[in-house]
Length: 138
Image (tube, rainbow, N blue to C red):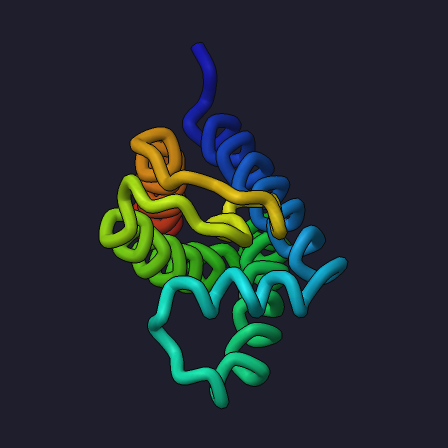
């Protein structure tokens, strides 16, 4: 029988890879990511140059923190907050085609927000919650 610790470790590695991949795509093209954020119409234009790098850094930190045991709860909490906010944006824009992408790993590629995007991000929230609950229960 697989130990719960091993399952949590696998989930942490999965989250690490997802967040690192996502942040590295955005680091390669921060301007493109800023344009993606702009499409959601949640921040005033003058704030985008400040918000964009903060989001990228948080994603990178989540990816790294989730694999370091004493930082894992912080990574999980920040990840849950960010993913929940992103999930709300996806639901709000469900069915809409975003010209510059949705911020879901690709930038500058038109992307229609579908149930697949919502379910994937819901899965990430559930995994992060599972990790956090496990960490608090230790």
